[in-house]
Amino acid sequence: MTIQARHPHLLRLTDPPVILGHRCTSCSRVAFPPDPYGCEQCGSSCEDLEELDLEARGTVHAVATVHRHHRPYPTTPFTVAVIELSGGPVIKAIVAGSQVGVGAEVEGVLVQDLEDTEGNTLVDLQFQVVQ
Ligand SMILES: [Zn+2]
Image (tube, rainbow, N blue to C red):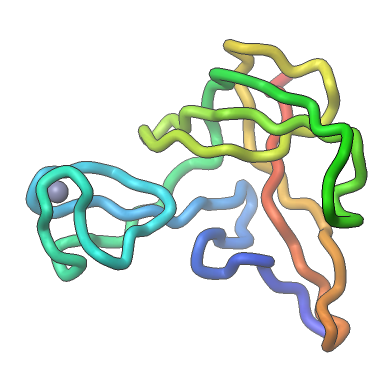
């Protein structure tokens, strides 16, 4: 049994966790998730994109509480937030607890997810309000 990221191409399991984005070497646009087709801003090809570590930290722009979900995990209710990362890209992610509001500063935390079919423990990224 091993511990691995649920999405290893998007997340590095470090402390604090690192989100894997990319930067265009032509126009400097920073994006997440990495786009395999090239830069959305200037049209450069994917060869002009370099991997970029993004801090798992940002500001909440919107929140929604999910009460019904088509999968058993995450268990409901849970809160999804639109988060502008300090490195620029805007993502959607689960924020622990229900006390998160617009403007809150949040940071990423690794949480143990489910086991896959081979018994490996999968770890995923969630956010929590910075105290
Ligand atoms: Zn570009």
